[in-house]
Image (cartoon, rainbow, N blue to C red):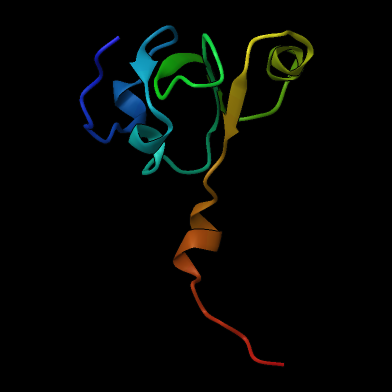
Amino acid sequence: MAVSEKKYSFNDLHIGMAVSVEQLSEIYNKYMIVAFDNMESRTGKLVFCGDVQDQEYDSWFMQTKPITPIYHDRDDLEDMAVYDE
């Protein structure tokens, strides 16, 4: 499954599309799950994308395929301040 290294925006996404985790790195405040055919795969299929962790989201953790859950919090990434105690 050949996938370009294009970075996707939320509007580009659709369930079932082939993606790598790196291609989703600029999508913020969305819950996403990528399912893989095996542990060595670098590309997988986008199987969930939503605003909340609902029953469908939770169900992906109960099956046998390898998955990667993804959530990039914009506030955490923009607030790159380092605090010294």
